[in-house]
Image (cartoon, rainbow, N blue to C red):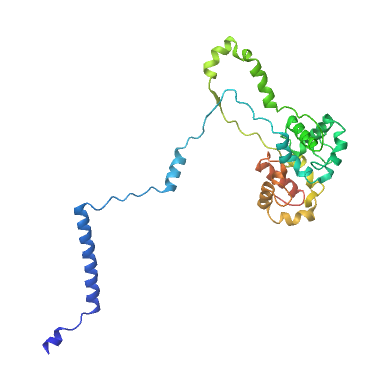
Length: 289
């Protein structure tokens, strides 16, 4: 009887306690062995990326100074093909607004007969539905003339495009190196100081107003409602667009949507100038942007 009483099972609490003590003991034993034999390594904690970025931002110089390379000048003018692809093709590719389609000899023949100088003058000053410089006022006369030659020649003309201005300006300097190599006495004295020209960034010039951008670029389609563009001042056409919100309209104008190319086909416009044009047109139709 006494043997039966002494073999009674352990309680649940005793089992749990014994298991816990066993686990703790095993962990302590492992740590002790690892410490003795030098198994443990120092754990390196990487500094958070956000903290590093913040520190770099805080110590970054307020302004930077750039050294301009001697003889550096403005970039070369765009070729006629580049101008056509970036600007002229918006209308001439499909023959919009009665513009002669690129490569259509029948449409270009009477225009080619007017002569190269006349066509260039029309392209620079604008004529009928075509705005001056194709709606891109940043194009130079040479770039416009090159674009005219490219399109006319594709339809059978044999016009000679002008030499890009940057290349033309470089030739005299190469032909007469002596003129450049003979500085005046005063220039010699100032040579050490001028050997490394420091270009200090000037404040950006104020961009064009919304009205100016509309007249130069947007009016080409919005004045007459071409390619389903909402006509300027037409409240019924503008109302559903105004409901989309100012930010959505600006995004569509900057990136382009459906038939409307990015920035109205004028990549030289800044986002702010495009936004100003959107506000000008929408407000003329009842918005209060």
